[in-house]
Length: 254
Ligand code: 9D3
Image (cartoon, rainbow, N blue to C red; front, side):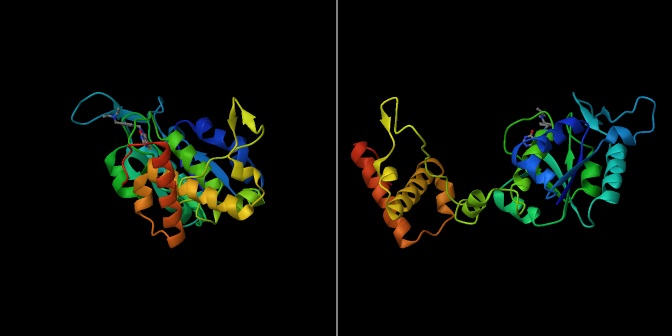
């Protein structure tokens, strides 16, 4: 897929294409990232991209004309019907399913704001969707764009190794992961759970599923509430709670 990013700091956004899974996806031609700088679409000597807010108050606002002109540039190069996503604190919190849906399409145009944000008329006329990373304050949309690019890169067919991609089609989005261990068997007097050394692959799969269910129940109960558990999952989770209660006397049992 092609991702076009409208940004005042293109070097920041393109940094993700130089490393790791994202870098390999670009090298393999599975992903391309192209930047468009609103500053290159100004017509005054100062190359002005921001101005004071109507109504007063601190902080500057990104001007609509350079943004719109940069977007027109992006549209000439991007696949037809590319979705225009503005990354902003007012947006819909990003979830994996939104990225899976977007990752199957050929083109995406990301708009990164700086300062207090962009002129609302640009949002009204040019933006299809507004996405947020969550309820905390960043200083601009570039890091959010990098997050989206990273998450989309690893969803492109062929971007991950075989082992990783096989793991992806399973239930991995819905539950938190189980714990992982590697050598040595004993680290700071803490041993690897015996079942993982047993060679009993069915028992290992059961233990991992139980850990995933139990940790999700403890740490992210709202994720568990979205699911309809099988009878086997219910039993595994009940056993997890019971074992926890035994090691933690007096704890609640809901
Ligand atoms: C402290 C500034 N705030 C004024 C009350 C508003 C504000 C303006 C601009 C807060 C953040 C930003 C810049 N943020 C983004 O561009 C951004 C963002 C974020 O801050 N949090 C979560 N997701 C995102 S996506 C883009």
